[in-house]
Amino acid sequence: GNSVTQMEGPVTLSEEAFLTINCTYTATGYPSLFWYVQYPGEGLQLLLKATKADDKGSNKGFEATYRKETTSFHLEKGSVQVSDSAVYFCALTPSSNTGKLIFGQGTTLQVKP
Amino acid sequence: NAGVTQTPKFRVLKTGQSMTLLCAQDMNHEYMYWYRQDPGMGLRLIHYSVGEGTTAKGEVPDGYNVSRLKKQNFLLGLESAAPSQTSVYFCASSRGGGPSYEQYFGPGTRLTVT
Image 1 (tube, one colour):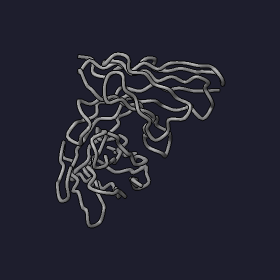
Image 2: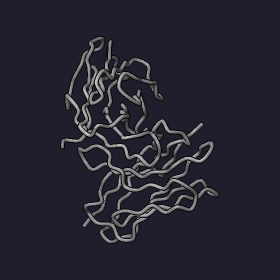
Image 3: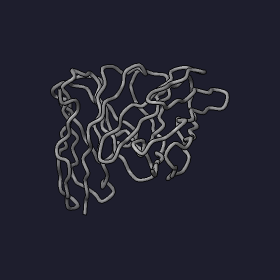
Image 4: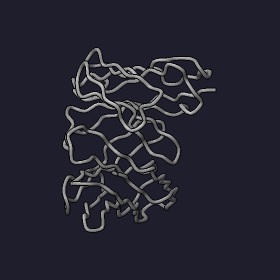
């Protein structure tokens, strides 16, 4: 079946540190991959996505590359800010058009000044 | 343009009571979804709809019913609430079902069943 596994949190970093949140997936066919972010008290927002192997999604300084050979989609940012503190979810949608998203368990990031 | 709104924001139910959660979107989206979010488990799809008058089961549909009588509204019903349904419920909508269509999420409803 389809599943997404994220690194355990919480992740605590100092401002301007480098961020990596690991995400690996299991899927049949050719899924699309996403990172969503949830700020405190809010719903989820799409952060970035990649729809085929070797695609790189990027937004707001965050990047992730779709690696089919390692079934991974790790999230990176070169210099985090306090405002990046949130919960980050990796997700996939199978190669169909139902729109169904399968989420990882989420990783909490706390950035300290 | 309010996007996706959810009513109510908070609710406490006793075991066996019923309630309906309302999701409304003003973006003329065809697809709508209900998810539940539990600690350490991410979001799981309960039911979804690919258009007015249609519904389909997601990953965890047991104990829930849904209706999509109007394109802009998607209702989630709990007929006989159980403590296992204590969760945060999120509604989402999208213009289409393919990966190029972003899902827009509401702010959530926090439900506690005692």
